[in-house]
Amino acid sequence: MSIYQKLLGDSFENLHPKLQERYSFQKDGVFQGKGTMTDIRGARRWMYPFLLLLTRWKFIFPESGKHIPFEIKNVAYKRPDGMEEVKWERMFYFPQVTRRFHAFMTIDPARKVVKDYLGEPHLFYSDLLFTVTSEGGLSISSGSQKLIVGKMEIPIPSMFKGNVEVAEGFDDQLQVYTIEVKITNRLLGNLMTYKGYFTEVDG
Image 1 (cartoon, rainbow, N blue to C red):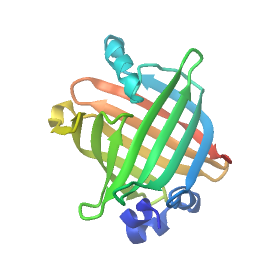
Image 2: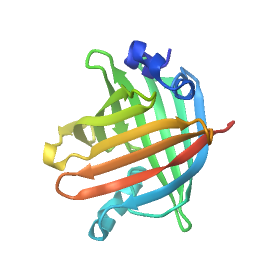
Image 3: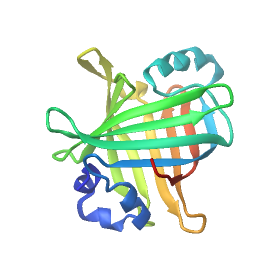
C-alpha cells in the first residue's frame, strides 16, 4: 500500500481509476510521465534574480512560456530510518534552459498530512492536504511551512508563505493526466503557475 493510499484511506477508491494507478506505487515503484505544460507563468520581473537563485536548489524558477516539454518521475523507497518516502522529480524543457523542481514526500498519519520537503538539498518544508474531489480528481493545498537552514526548521509566518493549490485529474477523451499548479503569496502575488498534461511512459 502506497503512502497516498494510507493517507486517503477509503476515499482513495473514489479517485479516477487512472489516478489510483498513478498513486498506488509502493517501495521500489516508479511512475514516469512525459507531456507538455501548455502555460507556465513566473513571478513579477523584479523577482527574477531571487527565483534564479532558488534554481540552485532545484526549486521554483523564474521562466515563463507556453507549450513547454515536461517530464515527471516519482520514485518510492524506504529510507534508512524505515520511513517510506517518494521522490518527485519534475523537468521543464525551456528552449534555452532546463529547470528542475524536486520534492521529497512522506506522510504524518496522526495529522493526516503529506510532509513535503522541497528542493534538493531541502530548502523549504510544507504540510500538504490531499482531498479527493466529487469528480474523482485530486485536490492538494498547503498548510504550515518552514524554511530549512542546515538542520534547523524555521516556521514561516503566514504572510510570507507560498500558498499552493494543485488540481490533478485524468481526461478520458484525450487519455492524458491533467495538472494545474498555482503557487502564490499574499504580498507578492503569483510566484509560479503551470498547467498541462502528460501520459505515463516506460522507464
